[in-house]
Image (cartoon, rainbow, N blue to C red):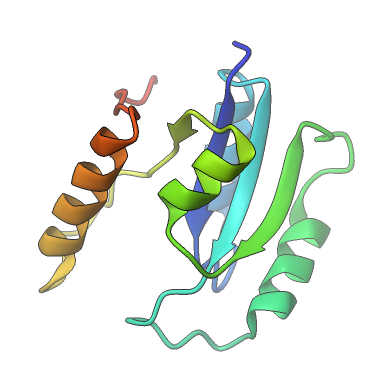
Length: 123
């Protein structure tokens, strides 16, 4: 432990699965920032400030090691600016949509460029 991890997503809506991932991440990392991101490929039903507020309401009160932040830039840039060394990503249960593979490859390249690595999830 001791690392700052970032869990980015649009969180529209916040699901029990999101909360489960955050809860599991709390067991591995000292500090977690849930990053409510802007994704130009998606058209969320709620505004970014509404999603941030909803997510804050959904988090248990005793999760004081979890922060929620809004961000419109690259996740890697947020990590660099805030000293986070881990990006948390969920493994999708469905096959990727058309175009996702290219974005994933670019994100991996950007993360590697900044010294970030992937780690497999623990059961």
